[in-house]
Image (tube, rainbow, N blue to C red):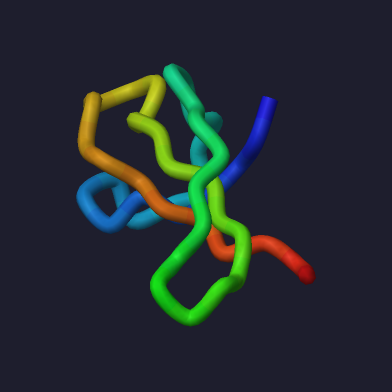
Amino acid sequence: MEEAYCVKCKAKREMVETTRVTMANGRPAMKGKCKTCGTGMYKILKK
């Protein structure tokens, strides 16, 4: 499971329904939803 910062919960939470995406500048990222509240989350990954 990937962890990312949830803006709504104001804490690091697990992400569910994750998908790996590439941002416009070419960097990889993970997109998903907060396991607790369902808010959309985004985590920038290393190259």
